[in-house]
Each structure stands twice: as C-alpha cells, then as structure tokens.
Image 1 (cartoon, one colour):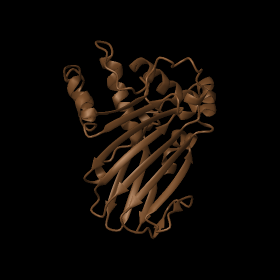
Image 2 (tube, rainbow, N blue to C red):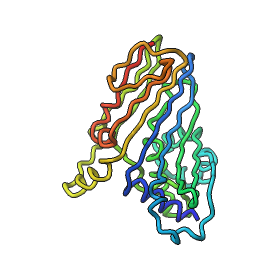
Image 3 (spheres, helix red, strand yellow):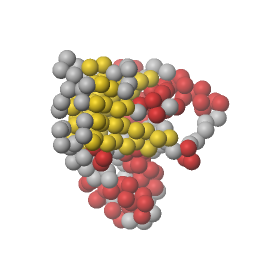
Length: 247
C-alpha cells in the first residue's frame, strides 16, 4: 500500500500539472495556523482503471512527532544540525486522501504556531523529511509518503515577521546551494511547471490597508488576500513571493 501511495505522489508531483495551495491564518497576537495542500486528483483521472483495482480508499492522518520518535535511533546518527532541523517538524501533521472511484488524491501538511517567526516554508519542511527518508531508508522501511527527492526545492530560505501593523514574508535565495540544471533538465522542468500554480492565501484578524503585491486579490471584508503564482516563478524567482502587508 505504501509503495503504491509513494509512487502515485511522486508521479503526481513530477509529471502532471498540480495546484499547491498554501493557507496562513494569523491571529491578532501573531499566533495562527499554517497548511499547504497539494491536489493530485488530475493524475487519478488519467490512471488506467485496473491499475489500482486492489487498492482500498485511504484517508490517513499521522503526526511527524510520532514518525520521528519511531526513527529516533537512525536520527541520532545524523549530524546535530540535521537533527535540529528535523526537530522543528515535530508539530506538523500530514493527511493523505486517495479514492479511486472519486478520482481523488490529496496531500495536506498542517501545523499551528505561536508566532509567525516559527513558520517554515512548506517545501523546506517536505524536503527536510525527504532527506531523512533517503538516509534512513538504507537501514529500514521508513517512509513518510514524501518523494525521496523532495518536492520543488528552490533553495530559498523563507522568513516571516509580524510587528505592529505590518506582516512580512521574505524569501532569500541560498545561492551557495543553488544547483544549475543542465539544458535538458531545465527544459523538462519548464514543461512540468508550465501549467502548474502556487496559490497563497493570507487570512488576518483585521482588515488589510495595503499590500506590496499588486496581484493580490481581496476578500469582501479585506481580511483575506489571495495571490497566485506560476509554479515556474516559485522555482526560478522565489523572491517574487516576498510580500509586505499593512493593516
């Protein structure tokens, strides 16, 4: 079962157009909730009818805290810096939903935070776990359900701040770790991400006065703003996702 789920998720994220929706809920005191949803249902619609005939519908939720606890011996062998990075994932929960009849495949990652400064970029969290998966898989059957190569790692470090009447999201490209793909890979990536979108929705406790991004769309009460990016921009120019919100 796990191997099938792993395969589907990997193919979904690499071969089809996908929609990634990131929701950030920020309360007046700076606490809130963060979740990211990856919709791979389009792949299910294209799968041969008999390819998953023996697979049951899945609606599974697990905590990364338990996952890390189950693999504590292997994690203890990692460098301290990597252990500290994985420690930050303890409060994340993951949900997978797969239903062949409804042509549904959804992947969700969620966490609560006490301050926006605790927020991590969703893809950093996913890729950190895939890194653990690669290392631990050498000795046991550990699998988080995340593709072993991670997902759309754009080598950006994302930080958040909420001070006074301003909220900021800043993405800084880590040039020292930037991997320049060869021409063939670059062309393939271009095709993969051409029809994919990254949507970010910010939900605030009070109305937004102005926002730095001119593409932002406001809800009727101006407490929610939505910005949609081509996935190619997320990959090639993550700084375009920088935003400053004033209340």
